[in-house]
Image (cartoon, rainbow, N blue to C red; front, side):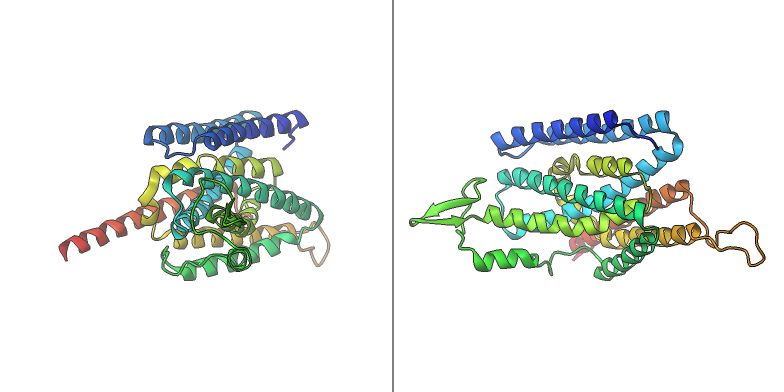
Length: 329
């Protein structure tokens, strides 16, 4: 897939412009967005992602379009899991609802920065070392097992990252929020506010999620441009999705199980791809042969859609059964 420098510049320029508009708009008026506003922006971002995939199809072919859609859906599902952790962090630190929009926006920007760094590292590693697919695949399978053992999504055992606990222990802080300010002067001393601690927690969470998401999408496409755009579109609209879904996020009780299956599937696909690329030579001469199947992108896309659909339906069904059980008691 050949992407000209002009296309790179235009893609990044439009994305940065959207973020700048969002930052200026939110930064000047911290508030709770209306449902109509959330639906409008979410529809815009999803529509742009669909149109981008169609543009890729028209200019580069159906294979690359399918790779983009598979990557976008995977990154979107991982971003929703990221959003669920954001929800726990904001609840844990009691962030006033009118300031949550600003905190979420900063968290999303940090996620973009971290993922951009890891995309660059991943692209260089893949170009230089073919065996990195074994490493990515093994890491995703290990992550899938770890996520699967967590079972249903639950915030009872949530604990802030180590970095956050260190900041809380070392830096003097005030218990009160001062708008969206990160520091405040009280009793003649400069103290950090809970908002700074929240942003550190969001940044640490973004860093951890980047370790999972980048190997996952490189398992679906090796094109850095598609990897970057899938991540950008997956992160757009998460802030609006947070306020739109609200308590619905907590109803996705099988989210961890679904993500475990998804990451495990991509991990196995990566290992098979590496085995397929490392061909075995014939003993008696002749052309080398591949000793493992390489799953086509159409199969991957169908599996991703199926896993996400089953996860959502099963989660909502269980939540509905639990609600009925509580009412009957």
